Image (tube, helix red, strand yellow):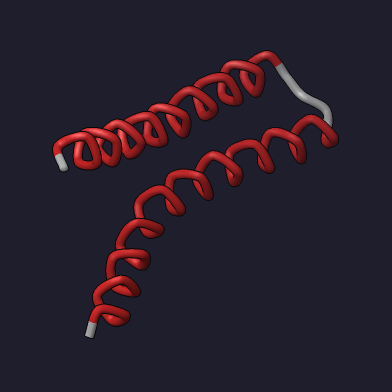
Length: 72
């Protein structure tokens, strides 16, 4: 039980760290100057990192609700 809680907390923290790191890297390259293609790629990287963070935070709740519904 404790392993699941620690695993979820760790996943949430790591996904938040991923968003922060990707944003920092993109910001550093943006300050140096980027072409439009690089801007597009960096936007996709930031959107992907945010998507990972959202999935990590919402996925376990949906699985738990489905398990409760099946047990009834």
